[in-house]
Structure formats: C-alpha cells, structure tokens
Image (cartoon, rainbow, N blue to C red):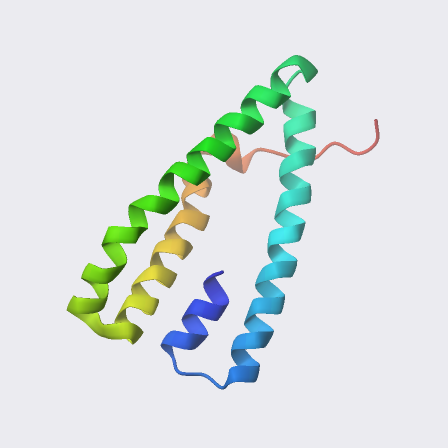
Length: 112
C-alpha cells in the first residue's frame, strides 16, 4: 500500500488517500493474479502447494517484525516521518526483485 502511505505522509486530502487505496488495491489484485499464473507456469503441479505455502509463510513472518519497529520510528521521526520511511521500505521491497536477473526474465506464456 505504497500510495496511501505516501499520500498520508504528504498530508494529502482524504479523497486523494482514498484514491491511492483504490489504485493500490487494484494493483495488488493484478499482482495476485500474475503471481498465481507464474506459479502455475513455472512449478510442477506437485510442488505448487509447497511453493505457495513457503511464500505465504515468508509474508506472515515478516509482518510481526514491524510491530516493535514502528513505535521506535514514531518516537524518532514522528508520524509523517514514519509513514515516509514505511513507504520507502515498501518501494524498495517492490523493486528488489528487479535486481535478480531470473525475475526480470519471467514472462507469462499465452495459452495452455
């Protein structure tokens, strides 16, 4: 949810933040469909459940790490600074796979 966090850090109008949420949600939906398609394309049927479970586990393990970090950021940088730092972190996390050549080469194949 990079856009809403960035807009809130910039103290944008509520409607702008809401539009950011809508755009981010649409992007997450598209990314989820692309992820499932890549998963089905790149991994054998017998491994898809395991690969999906490992991915979900990784996502769920990372979230609690932010719980002690956010209060420290709030104390050091305030609300706007924390929102900006979180937005920057999300941007880096979203762009990090582009540093891996095999990720950049992934393409969806047309048809069955």
